[in-house]
Length: 203
Image (cartoon, rainbow, N blue to C red; front, side, top):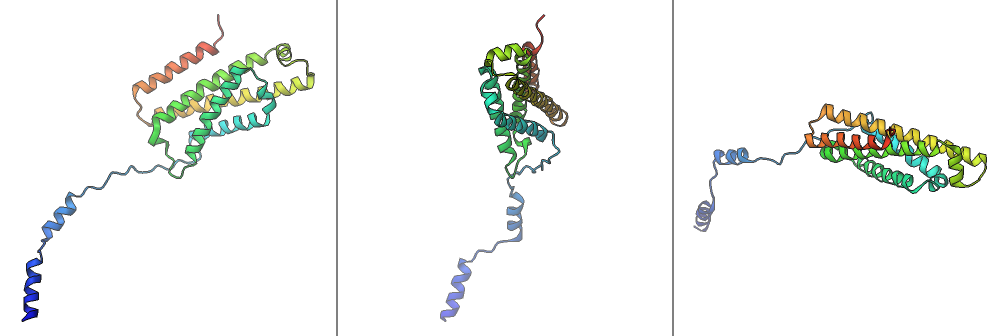
C-alpha cells in the first residue's frame, strides 16, 4: 500500500515535457556572435613597419651618446616614435593579435608614424647638412667624432625614411582591403598636407 501511494505522489510531481517544448527552446537559443579570428602572418605590411621601428630603437640604443647630443626637437621626435613602436609591438605579441579588431586606432598610429618619421628625416638631414654647423653645435671634438656622428645621423635618416615608406604602404593596404570612414581617410590627407608644409622647401 505504501509503495502504491509513493508511485502516485511521484506521478503528481512529475511534469511531462513534449519534444516540441524541447525543440522550441533549442530554436529560440541564439549564441553570442563571435567574430572569426584572422591570423596575421609575418609577411603582412604591418610587420614591415615594426621591423623598421625596431631598427630605429636599436640604432637609438647603440648610438645613445650621439642621440643624447641631438637638439631637443629631434630627440622628442625619436621618443614619440619610440612610444608608438613599443605600443604596436606589445599588441603584436598578444596571442589573439588581429589589427582588424582595432582598425581605426592602428590606421591612426600609422599616420602618426608617417608624420613623425618624415619630419625627423627632414630635420636631421638639414641639421647634418653642414658639417661646420654640427661641429659648432657639439664643440671641437675632432674629425673622428664628427664622422661618427654624421654616420649615425645618416643611418637614422635612412631608417626614418623606411618608416615613412612602410607606414604608407600599410595604410594603402588597409584602404584597398577594408572599408574605412571617410572622416578617417580625410585625416590622412590633412596629416600629409601638414607634413609637406614642414618638409617642403620654402620658395
